[in-house]
Picture 1: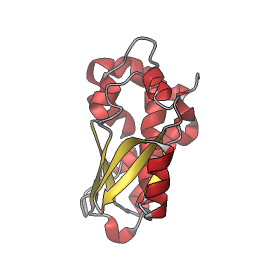
Picture 2 (picture 1 turned 30 degrees about the vertical axis):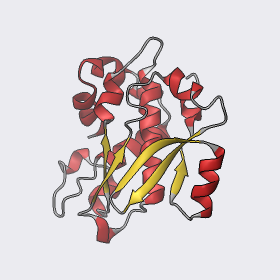
Picture 3 (picture 1 turned 180 degrees about the horizontal axis):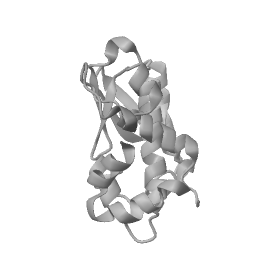
Length: 177
């Protein structure tokens, strides 16, 4: 399912992106396969033979819609490696799952994760944005929406002290493969 969805999302960049699927760590492939197989609709599923066993046998939610996910995969810039983009997409799903743990009672819930701030950036630009001490974070804004944001240490401390639900996005996945 993940590869079919990536094919649709990446469009003209799909051949290069799918070619790199085998080069990303198994852990990232599992995250993408599991999260992209969740439909967010009660009683709805992809073909059983294509869905990971854990999703098929114990449907849970919420399902995540990575808003601007297609633009992120399509927007390969000079020197960008599609595998790095896949790895970062897996990290986005991981962070979202930390903010919204999988629950049977949430199988029919959909959460939108907006990646507006990174969708058109080259991988090097995403990394370089942190050179001045800022950090990429996922911020839970409400029960059905989160955003990827760049936060200064001051902003991060304020969010922590106000008990704002956040996850630090691990950008080490953008290191050379």
